[in-house]
Image (cartoon, rainbow, N blue to C red; front, side):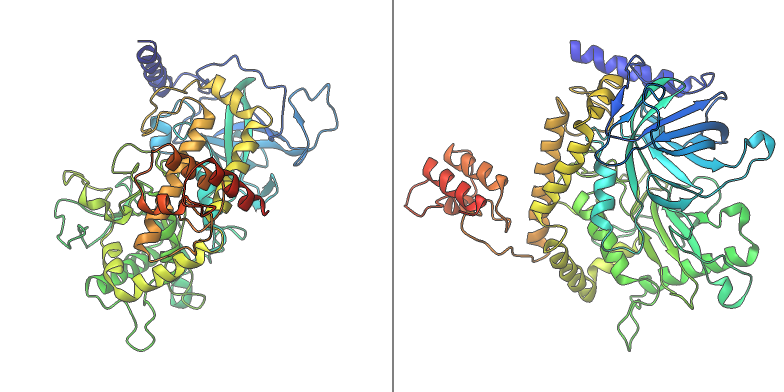
Length: 532
């Protein structure tokens, strides 16, 4: 009964937040949390106007960041001389779709200003928290991602491989003297010298061919509708649904007639080559319209996380001028519902492909399906071969399980060592209750992190089997993932306790090779892990 009442309270409060248009800024569920000191940067926002999604309002922002390993204090009078990372005006609005509509903690978009909007202020480029100068920033608000690390984890996984991946820094936010919790202040996928270094498109010739940023997403505003329908994994066409592309750079209002015609024609030509299975040059074997490795890297990022929005929502792709690079490339973004976090569209499963999501999506949808090119790519032998080869590269470098577990531990420690997670949990008390669209309802932060780790290990091992990666087994590798670590100890204890039905695990559990599986094998395994 208590849990039911908590759930009702969360729903009611979220509804109040969504409709409280008269409020200047939406308060947290518990506005009485106090921040005195933290290891994370502190961001103050002061705003006198009503904040909404459609139009920016003037606000003031101040950021204190004394650097890694140093404490940041909210009382700047008692602690003078702290490093001010940024102080000035910003143009502020809410951002996001589901993260705005279904979250008590709302994400923001902000742009630094040289003076208030009411005085004709214009955007200015600034460096924030060590990230390169730009005039377009986001403050992601992890709420339904109770681990708070899924977005930044996906960015870190993708960064070594892709042309551009956003950077982000955790911070704690105080708005109008109220504690608002932990946010991820990060770069926005946008044109910029330090972001997507796109050229400004011209009106003719090579200048007309780039640069452009588009996005596969919902049919909202002015979009380009694909001429080609989505398909299921058996190739059957879904005739009731369309795929839409949103204009991100230049925005629809800024596109000239020639530029709009060009980018629409370019997308049409790309899709036509996929439809006709002629997407490789007959001489070189290279893909004609896409950077194949960029698409492979994006697919692996989507698949390792089984992102329910993968390929069909927030799927950002860009193109330089032909003289620079004529092929479309992709960027990772919007991963808060990934890594087993969603209870719909099989987002919680570790044993299905996200690119085949059209098989389970209802035909009554008018949008939000996976474009047919992902089906075409994954049916082609050469692409599948290259996908498998790239997976092997990943698994031998930054996708080693021990490396990933260490990365998760590092991010989790960053949120806990200075009390940020505990303060955030008091501001938004959601542990032990369902928050849309959670699959796993964690009782606390530690259990959420444990679930994330276990889910990710299971996902990687399933992908290993289907992408033909065979880890090199060594003595003590009880779970067969190619690495020695605490997960092998857990697997061994599970075997000893009779909880494992995996024949491979049971055969590898005899670490000391004495013909028996018992506590002596645990001791032998610990010695191996420790290097004795």
